[in-house]
Length: 335
Image 1 (tube, rainbow, N blue to C red):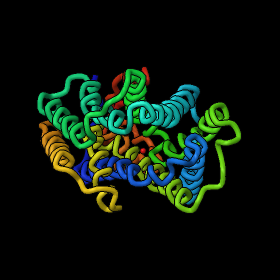
Image 2 (tube, helix red, strand yellow):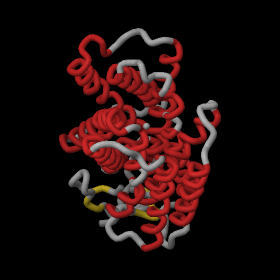
Image 3 (tube, one colour):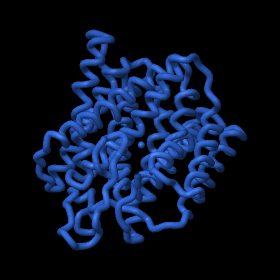
């Protein structure tokens, strides 16, 4: 099973690499605001986060002149599953895993994303597989080997599965919808799903007026980690392929370390710095692997950022879709 579908022009690949790195680093900065909003009702807060993000993203689609797209039943199911697993259940798993095993456990498990994507790619080259292993080792070292009980581990594995779904389920949608609309629609669908979860678990206490620091923290999550990082990630996936993009998931703990240092939340330890160095080393090894870069069916005339228009038949890069294990459908392959 191949996760790469066509040849990319170097400028597109460079853009994709930069966007994937930026997206995962921004997701890592969540550590710097988690303490600010830890006392706010979790599910209500996440519903507010995605509501604001969806409003911003939908406004962007309007300003960019991207009209609403009619979805098929299959596409609607994929988008719903993306929102349910990649956003809602992912948040629930992370929350419950953190409560039971602490952030180190779930962070360590999520650090295996690059290796999981390399394996899901079908037949990864030894260099790519080795690079993913180095990234996982660095992310694990930087995050800290977590401790916790079996339920905590199971919640963490659930978060890992959902993190993979966040990218895998989006791949068949990106050529038609583009990065902005996939981000906007999935965020909008997450709002009622999280609201229902909050009502079931917290009742009317799911919402309250946030304090100023809480409002700033939720706003940061909505605008930076959701609106900006989602777009960067979804625009990068068609340009460089999931296996390559997955290497940058190792930057999540690096972003957390950097944010903590900038905000004065703690000085990085020697294992933190060594782990960060391993992550960078693994990414460099992976990017130097032999083989042509990958991108989506859309190229210059059909950029996913520009609405995901498909190229004309016979013009440019033909797609060679593969079956994705998460979607069960053809397509190519992560806050």
